Length: 83
Image (cartoon, rainbow, N blue to C red; front, side, top):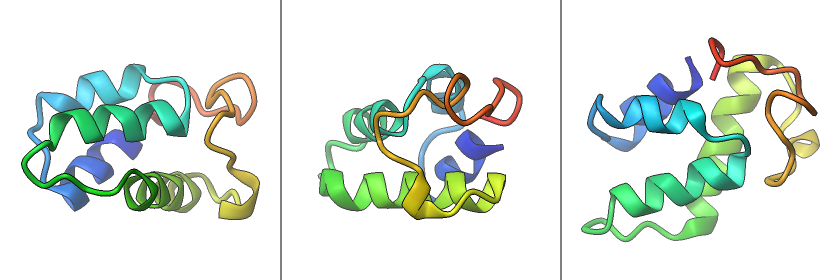
């Protein structure tokens, strides 16, 4: 869900979704997105903000609580299906 929403918002290829779903932290997802969008060269901070916002929307966690380095599964209980 999270990866699909990010792909939709950021105009990424559907093949990228699988890679994003494997990432364990918001920072790792933002890094992968930056790698996939070199032509757009988004600022890492704005990509990370988008990642955190989508995680918050999809999980109900306040964005202030979602730190970039938190493990999505271990720290936030976001399983692979939700990612």
